[in-house]
Image 1 (cartoon, rainbow, N blue to C red):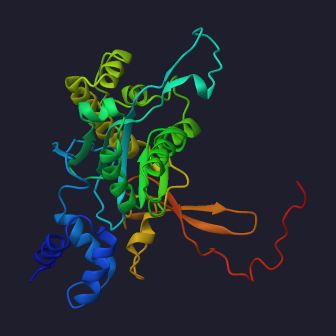
Image 2 (tube, helix red, strand yellow):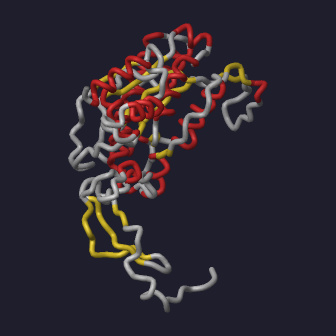
Image 3 (cartoon, rainbow, N blue to C red):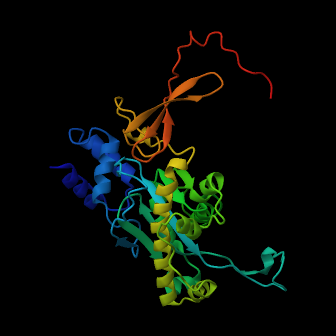
Length: 337
């Protein structure tokens, strides 16, 4: 039996309720002759997994975009990198004005909740999404779709979102705990908005504007607040439009991430997911195409050889210092601030 056939057998036997990590651990323990380690089993499962999460979660397949300048090769690593975006309902409140209002909690008539979400695994064609039904909107019940996105976040090693640290992830965590869900297993967040603000000086750091400057795919146009109000009132066509808008945001965010990826410092070390004890890998994309730059990275007491990744363009350095301790025995560093 091949790896793929065995993965299909286990997934069909245990269903989607068993997380991929747990199922991979079980496969590796029961068939060490086929799966030498857990990561090997996880990779096999990912190649055959289709629908994620609960029912009524859509999966959409799009053609792979042509992005020759963003990267040269898709490095297949065991790291599960999730790109996501959510859309939420507005907060309704009783107010006496529209400028500089201080709204107390007892003025809130209706709190926010999740309308739709969309997510995809890096480099995979499928985009998963879910939206509320009319009845769920009117009941302000997002529990069904929240369980679906929880499962994907729980699987992820890295989560990418635009304004992830101040919006998407805190908002999702609020809905997770409100719906009685446990915290997802630990993951690392890449907030593209934070890194764009840190490294660039664009007139606007909004996703659509940045993509316009970088000649990348753009957001889908919509009617603005009118669309959100229709969704809040349970308009099924508006909810479909919102879901489509949400899906497009995830697709274009992947392009934004790939474009700024070599600028992200620090980027989660992808090399940790592909350790083989023999080859050095780019910490940003996982490629082994590392080119010596003939230059050193200096700290106050050491210097390290610098490399440029021939795949993603990111810079990296060795962890072992260039000079032996005997050469640095008489090195003196500055004191004080």
